[in-house]
Length: 421
Image (cartoon, rainbow, N blue to C red; front, top):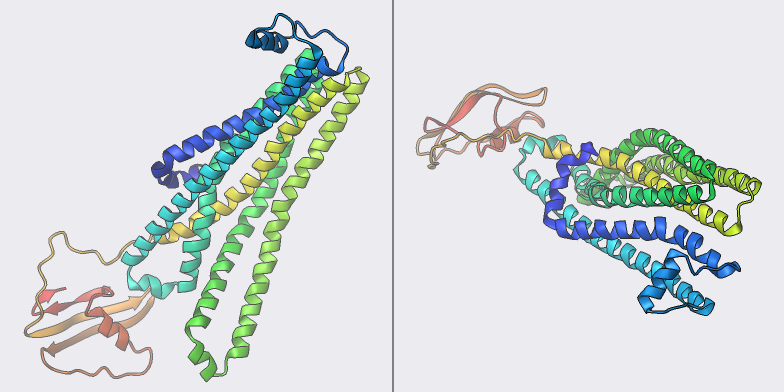
């Protein structure tokens, strides 16, 4: 997550919403990881077995809370039937609050990221836009910002909620295994969880390169679509409709190919974890039967095992999104870290319209490594009309765009009445 540390500043404006959302996620984790397994382990044996539960801690708590000297089996049954929906209501309410607040925080973060990108684009030199297609920049501003939002907000929440669920579930599992002297079952969970993590990391490494290529091709596709929509007259004038359709089909097909490669690795994570979970459950079943474990004990342990694997599976999906988010951050930083090469002086002179002449003095300019103007010397008196004549690509537009300082020359200068602009 250190890769995304510079972007956590965007959470400051929604820190309360995000914090409450995370706390709701922790409450969800407690209800899921501990509430359900312990309910199965503690309450059900008293209800379904012909055993006296009067000394059970939870039964004594009910008696003290309700002020009863004795509690009947029917009262216990009623309490248990009410307690089950209470746990699910707490779980559902916490999950809803978590999802809603995290969604709001994410939208605010995405708004801030896109605004900062747009502000940066307004201050970049024209040479940057000459090097990059507008459609690709649009894809970075929209699609890549959305992927980064998921990492900064949604995945950050999941990286707190899911490990907490896992910890509570493993804690319940170890507690119940200790009660039944079934430490081997707990050991199975502790071994299979890291094995699942290895599978997730392996798939994630393959996913990273594919995600980067997919986002690049997405930018190319948006650029091609943007160019086509901006040039309908030229396309029809030169009868280029079939050419444009063919080009678009090739790029869409390439997008499909890369999307399926990314999906192949992302979708492989969940089934892989489920296979590992099924193997662990089968081993636990075999050991439980051999050790004469009761049905309610095994159900409680089985539920704790399930609640252990579920967050691992979700963390696998988070890991895949982190890889895609890293590629998105790299594409956004291409814009955010682009230097502004039109630097003003610390104490610029006030501008006055020229009264005598505009002079180009030994001026040279290039787009990257491609020279356009070399050692140009020219004086244009005020009031004189000058025509720039030359073949396409000779530098006429560049020559004119240097006067309002859309670009800075590599050497030489332009003066207004002797003042270098």
